[in-house]
Image (cartoon, rainbow, N blue to C red; front, side, top):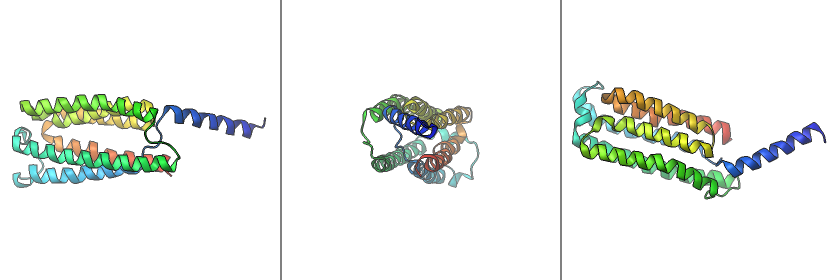
Length: 206
């Protein structure tokens, strides 16, 4: 057997094994759009939190104001729903382009790995909001989201794991500076998503 034929056969075997163990139809464009949605949401949040208070400075008052926090919660929930809807639509389209089924055993395992940290994190954040512990919300969002990405990365591209590590690190920094929560939220869910989405798009979706 020629060396080129052997290499081609090994590549085919590797692709088959990868398709059977990893979900490879994630859309990089969905990451970019999710980042844009997050930045738009952060801009709206900024107008609520800072505009009439004199600029972007560390002020613990904003972290503990119940009305402002709940407004931000509903904005974040809207951004989350929009991002998930966009991600599902573009990922299904990407799977069809590759001749794959979107809902398969691997995608189910991926969803299960993502769901546990996300549900736990969502409940933790809701409990903290009810208790009035607003200072941990932004950091908890980033940390639990990062943990979900690291957990789910075993069933998809390894790039997802590195995004998760970045989100966790950013969340830990945000925990020490709760008055700047909106800034770290923007970086984590906005800027990092756009960078990650661009890398995924040009690396895998071309």
